[in-house]
Image 1 (tube, rainbow over the protein chains, first blue to last red):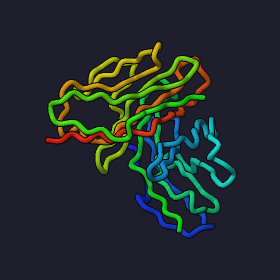
Image 2: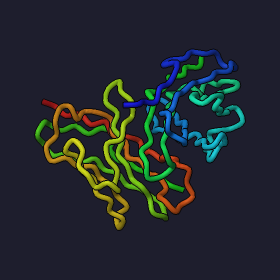
Image 3: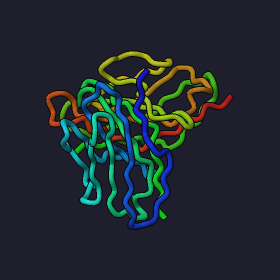
Image 4: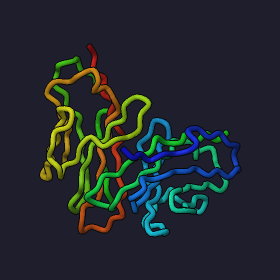
Length: 114
Length: 113
């Protein structure tokens, strides 16, 4: 069964550095998402992406964040200048359509900012 | 704005006992409700959704629009049910949505032998 994959599984970076988290969605899916979960807190929506454009973003997704689908398979989340509070688990998800279809989640990337 | 509340952070039961994980939501339109489960060291996976009205691994959940609830129930808990359970809401078809899921805080279910 096809799965969403994410790399790396764990990323450690210093405050102020740029990080890129990578995701490979399921191949016939059209809608892509990033969520994050700070330790001990709920899973929070960051952004949805369709047709090479951001469809919706949350208040968390400020100018420090960007998303891109650089080729036909990868979907990336970039944090330009990381802060301590960016430390979290980041989940990528994909679905065929925005409603009526299941969202499939990747295993997550644990980002630690020191 | 949508909101999902799971009042219990932790729930412990013994094997064979009934279990109910509570979920309440607030949304003025017509929502899609889901239960996701995360077993130890595994990814989030869909357990069930209200529109399918099916039973998965013995779990059921009924959408009660009057009480704005979507509680998850299982009559006889098993040790392998121990996991983190998340209730989630998505704006339904016809609403302005691009698929965003709004999650509750999650409930850690522990089933003791």
